[in-house]
Image (tube, rainbow, N blue to C red; front, side):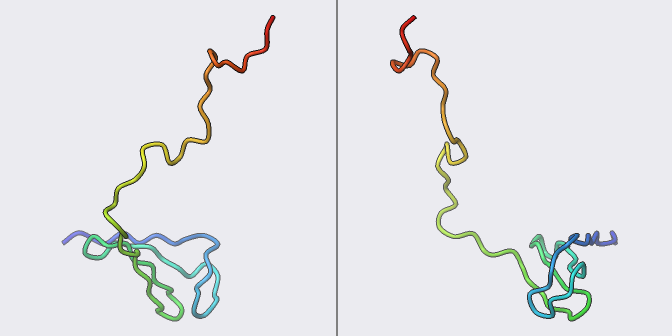
Length: 74
């Protein structure tokens, strides 16, 4: 059986015991889990909401158009 990979999250603070650098991240049954090694508080990845559809240009902040009508005359 393969050993489970666990990674610590640098600078993270446990929401329960407020300890710093004690949270480890790992996958269990293909679900992302975070556990505090000090107080054993556990959190899992929140379930996706809605249909999971995303707008095509959600991360676009602007589109540059060099042929725009707003060009200054020469």
